[in-house]
Image 1 (cartoon, one colour):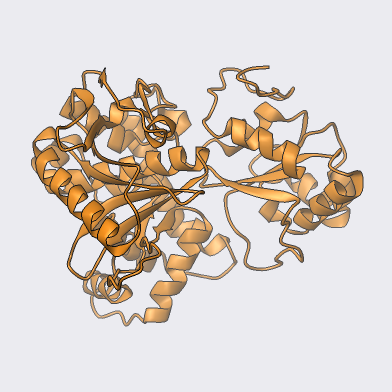
Image 2 (cartoon, helix red, strand yellow):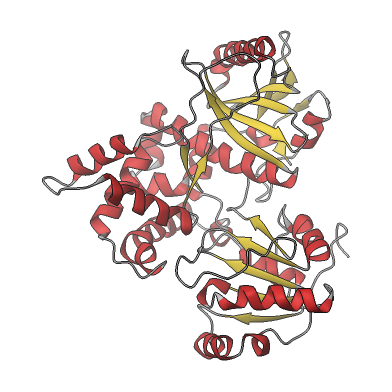
Length: 434
């Protein structure tokens, strides 16, 4: 036992535990099966192996072709083995989903499974949703806490419990933040040279453009158009962007090529299915008065290294363009907040209303309690961010949404986690944990 989690026989040497391991372990007990979804290379398979005692791998491994054939011919045979059993990249044979659901049902949850998937199949979809039998968990690249860059002195759960932070942050430089943004949270490159880590991100983006987006559902998509869409998303990172804006960007970048709104939306949907891009929904609290709220989602890259690679960023370029750096830093913080929130059974939104009041992140707990967070690269921006947060808190209380549990400025170069005189918290990202 480690942290209350039973380790399986397949655990890899050198495995670094992930924040979601505990939740995954609990879901296996409660539901019988859990599906770990997320982008390629984020560590799904290693997490699954750490909890399982046997496995069947359907992609990118020796014998994968034979395993896929067995699974297609006899899904039940493919699921035979010591439990919990790992079914890696289940979407390669979608009928396995229904087979897992049936096995869990028939055995009364004695047979347990961990599925991993780096894409959501559009063709050959399972007959059953899996509700009550297969719980879904979203895994993302490693957070700063998981990779050892955050000291974890301020946890999101403590903040929701009303605790006031009072702790020093690790000594962080602008060079460090550049490294974290461009390296990203991919487990395989946490201890390599930055030059090599950047090469992996560029390769990832190239694979998405040239192969992954067509392979997900066997629909041919133009790699150049995919590349232009990724560039538009990177240029508008962490902003609520209309389809017409992306269409304009793509058309301008591609010359006279005619593009349709339907093409852009199809490509966006495909990017979501391979978990490269996800939507951050606009927050819509239950208000007694009418406040016009923007419900258009923001498009968020799953890791800051991807938009950095798309834009051809380097540490030197980022430090020469702090505006672009700020948006990529926000992408990093949103990645971490999404992971920390999921571990606390909470969701992440953003807020923008008709009066142009915008707040970067709203974290809402399953019980309806909420917190507002602004993300800033440097400490000098904390005063304006705090004013924004207090304005939102006042507006929501007046409108009937109740007061936030806390408001906080999450910053990159802060030296200390503390509470300001106006009640707003200041939390360096290198202090934050779930």
